[in-house]
Image 1 (cartoon, rainbow, N blue to C red):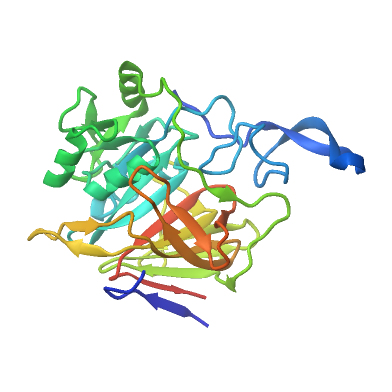
Image 2 (cartoon, rainbow, N blue to C red):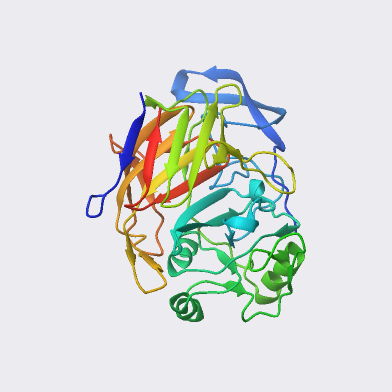
Length: 353
C-alpha cells in the first residue's frame, strides 16, 4: 500500500580519499565477565558498513557518515551549491559528497547543497548561486561555503561574515566554464583552487565542533513501515529512490524512472539513507524567491534499510545542529554511509510503499 504525505500550509509541521580504509577491526578475544570488563584483540581489516558496538571515538570516524577514514579529517566541511536543472544534469562528482540536501528555490526548481568532508574530488560543478537558507545550513555544519552568485539577501548575509565563503562574484579563485553545458549551468572550480584559498585564509587551522548524526552499529536495525520505493514530488520536478535489499542502498532516479548519474563515473547515484525534513516556505518577492525557516521544527521521516521511521526535527538556533528524533524520543539512527536530505515544503508530496 502506498503512503502519501502532502503537507499543506500551516500544518506542523588536498585531497583526502574516503575510506573504506584499513581500520583496526576489533575482534573479541575474550570477555571477562567479572567486574564488567571486556578484553579485545586488534587485527587488520576494512570497514565497509557498520562499526562494532563499542564504537567510534577511538577510530577516525566521520560524524557525518559514521565511516572510518584514512588520515586526519579536516577542521570543517565544504558545502557546495550545485545546479539541478536542465543542462546542469548530470552533475560532476556528486557521488563523492557525504550528504546532499535538495532545496526548493524560485522558478519551481530545486537546488542541491553538497556536503564534502571525507573526500574532496578533483573539481566541483556545475556551481550556482546561494540563498539565505543555504547559508543557514552552512552555519549548522560550521562549514566553508562555495557558490557562484547570490540573491540580494544572500549577498548581505554572506558579507556579514557569518561563515567563511568563496563566491565567484568576489574572489580571486579561478572558476571556469565547461564547453559541454550552456551558461549559467556550466560553472566549475578545481579543488586545488579551493584548497589554496582555505590554506591562505587559515580556515582549516582550528578544528571545529561540527554537527554529528547517530548511526547504527553492530547488528542493530531500525523498525518501521516497509519503504522500498519512495517518491518525492516538488512543484515541477520529481525524484524517486528505490531500495535494493542486497546492497542496502537506495538508487535515485528522476521524473518517473530517468537515470540520475554522476557525470564523472557514469554510474547512478546511490545512498544509504534518505531523510525527509518538512519545512514551511514563504514567497518573498516577484521573482518567487523563498524564505525557509531552518529553525522552525517540524515532521521528519528517515528511510533506511528498507523501512520508514517517522519523527520530528528541532533546531535551537542557526549555530546549533538539527536534531532528528523518532516517535519514542530517541535520535534517528542512520545507516553508516551517504545520506540524501529532501527539504520538503508545503508544496511537496511524498509517497512510499
